[in-house]
Length: 253
Image 1: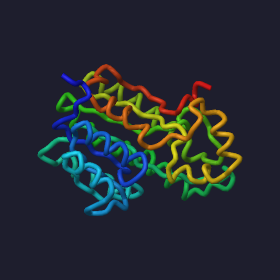
Image 2 (image 1 turned 90 degrees about the vertical axis):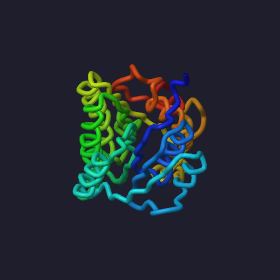
Image 3 (image 1 turned 135 degrees about the vertical axis):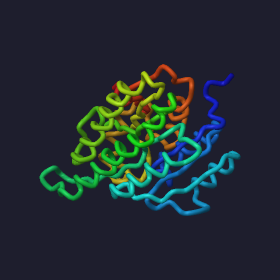
Image 4 (image 1 turned 45 degrees about the vertical axis):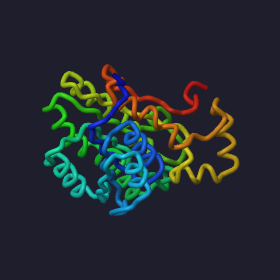
């Protein structure tokens, strides 16, 4: 038997419209899972991620939900738990970032980043995780960050949220591991996505980043595929509460 086979599983991926979320959804589908994609701006039909998933022979459903809206997040959680088919895999990937020196970091930006990157993820995970605990099985994967370990520059809200994601991963794993639910996180390194466009476009920052990465390149969203499938599969049955860096060796430098 293939422990990485996800045939028959249902995965929910937030932030699935593009970048890392799209790559994660595609990887899960290639491993056999049907996918529900969630994003504030996800097309109702014929999105790029839907085409990716359907091309593997799996089913795809699009749900448009703004994770900055607490009421919408609670409604999403209720909708997912009320379905006849239970969610087997929850990937909490949606996120946003605001860059500014701390003394200029607006409270509105702080609240937005904390809501999308941390509070909404707790609310959704609490709802879906309760059904997993009741069933005695399930996989939950958060998208953490290198800034779950480090402080970063000009991203106080994002860093606080991503430290919170790492702590939440461990706290939920402590509670839910005895019930057969695996809670883990992936910490992407410097991945070439829209969130890092400002860094990629800054020649000095980009060079400084590349000089520190032993792999010698920016990561691609597809570099997260293997870790996602691993943590979503039976191969990770005894993996609980870990924050797995996929960073080209950055943290080991």
